[in-house]
Image (cartoon, rainbow over all chains, first blue to last red; front, side, top):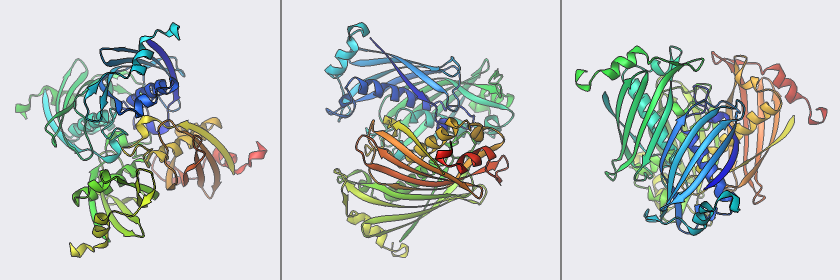
Length: 135
Length: 135
Length: 135
Length: 135
């Protein structure tokens, strides 16, 4: 299991007419945090190359406290990999207020061009099976 | 419990670089189907007026078959209301292929300007407590 | 030159915190109207096939009257093709109020996988060079 | 006239099916750079408070070189204010390749709750009329 952190600032156009971040935008944040994890670990080709690409199979979001314009958000992520599935849990914390804004848990798998689920690429598997303290 | 149906066509900009509808866009579809339900039942003020507005508390999406450019999507929705919570389930079916693309289940509540959860407006409650055949 | 019309309804998540359609969303509408034109003329492969795809080179939007939740929008489009460039002008009218919401004028070209500008596909060119009354 | 710089990284969901940043997303970038300018100058209330809010009147984008996944983008912005209009020009440069990706020029005005154009708030005017070297 791996733990990683990603930070971002809420952008104006991500707010809806209720003046807070729209519920769908949290999935944009989730995806951004995941892709950043792959990038910082030299696994960007695991997203864009090799004829395999990751697809989200399932996601659950629990919206706890709203996010507003320019709020600073810290996303703490736990990632693991078992049986061909990458599991992730994000805790999105509003650094401006200290409150947890949203919890996301999801699963992704790798598919090929024919949309058939394949095994997780070895480089991703090895990274996720390694514990944090083995880095 | 109420059953309603809404249809839309996949738009080009909703696709991501994998050539299919991005996972976050399904929440846009979910919201659009819900708002349309409120509108067609004369309850748009239940979204924009009265000082109360609906917020999503929780949503789970199971992504089953991808959607692609210009696919026709039918969204069948079940809505109910208990204990101050509106529950909804969408089945999003790709009319172009006949396959279920995604199942969404979620909960929303009504909050006031101070972001305190309030009771569901009576007009919404009455509508959702009525069975379809009572219309 | 061709004239076409496309209609859509403003969706809730397209509003920003000012309660009106965000300026970027008008480009989503522009793209949707164009792709729909290609589709209804049997030229969808001109978007997704043949190794050529259309890219926007330039766009100007004049925002005149805001659009709000559930407004019905009619997009009247003029399309022409000269010197390897497709030119388009959209007039987006709010059917709910009768007011012009936005005027968009833009240019697109076709590029290949190497991102080199190529000639407009013959099927597109023929369609756009034909006058409306020749259909 | 003021010059400011803002940087961001291209996010995965901002790509469309052509594998590059969708044309509408450049307006999201434009807005983000502007709001950041207001924030770093202590003028966030000029966006969210006082009963006045900025609306885009016009925008022109010239798309020059595409942006791709995880590209680093530097946005250099010139802002000025005359006759109740804030004018801005962005040059968006892909730091990863060194190429200019897009030029945006636009105008915004301030409107009140009744959507009537008002004078630019004094704090914004003073800031924009001051030259960079007077800071």
